[in-house]
Length: 326
Image 1 (cartoon, one colour):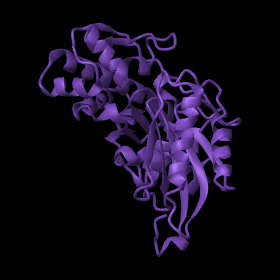
Image 2 (image 1 turned 120 degrees about the vertical axis):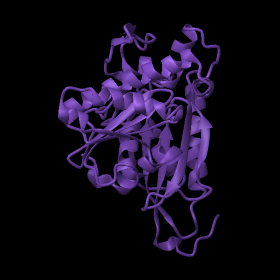
Image 3 (image 1 turned 135 degrees about the horizontal axis):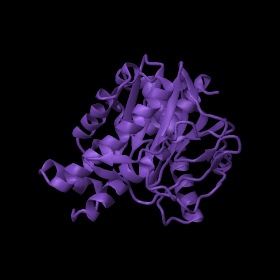
Image 4 (image 1 turned 90 degrees about the vertical axis):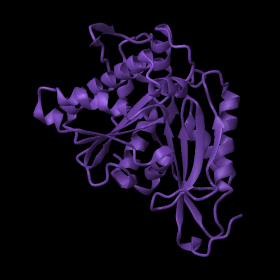
């Protein structure tokens, strides 16, 4: 095991981030820093079976725990999971992982922790809550107490801090902005996405990475991934540019609605597809700039300051900054 001469004074959270493509785990210190060499990743996915998913989750938890420096201690396990979730019962039903419906994620991770000799709290929250706590702690939302964090990736998630306190709601799904409805028109055309769980007007149906690519392919784009769409956008492909503009407008409308409801000051956005082009943020901001309420126009939309580490830092915040949770 690694040796760290100052580790005896350190308490680490074992952070777990579960999403529609992958699950990751790492050790995170009380300053929001990942322990070098402790980050591990395994696949999840739409076709993964329950045993395969358990193997992936258990595998990254065990590997991260094995990275604990000598003399240090793990004080809790924080899990940020794609939603929806059942906070009270510790269940998850990730929309893009259909074999897990009401799966007892908290109990399963607790059993792995017990196997490793860890008698510590295991806390489960929606991934959007975790990423928002990360941005508020060490990211783009430091010092701002009315914040929404968002992830635009395989799906679209979100979380809320209002008045300096995390808002989870009774089930843990407050902030699940990917399934608000934003259907209207874009450039004189109906703003409608793929049929996502029966609702083609949900934000995720129009603006997630895979759904944006699917729309572009319906209109002549020949690529298959978000990375290819981003490259086509940079090369000036007209369909790719319309796809990104359409996605940016949809996200901007959702943010405007959330701000009108909650009087937000800042929205911090991460996730793989959010990096497709800086212009994506410009399209969102244009929607906000034209809103009729000044208090909505005040909201700032910024990229995450935490890169790909944000979800893990957020999962650790469920332990290290538990005082913000209800």
